[in-house]
Image (cartoon, rainbow, N blue to C red):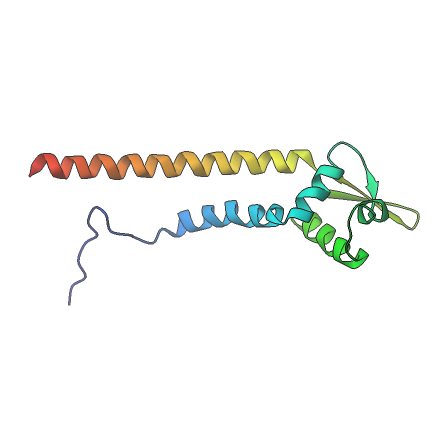
Length: 127
């Protein structure tokens, strides 16, 4: 049996698009957690110790430590050791690149919608 060729409107897996989508979704999942977003706000324009950050929340220090680890792994915060303390600040450049990734993804999605609409109109014009 010969597989049929994709037609307009068919959903065709696009591995490149899936990779781009993951590139957008994964960082958004990191900052989707309200506590992580609040941590980013706290250290946006100043450096705070892990203890100072934890004091702003009514959860365990270990919960905040886990959030800081996720933010650090994503590249959204920078950690600096001072003696036995760990100081954190937001890496604003990393978050700026996230914005450009989201904007690029959005533009690409709009272009795909435009292409599909134009193809549908061409099909209608032929009928």
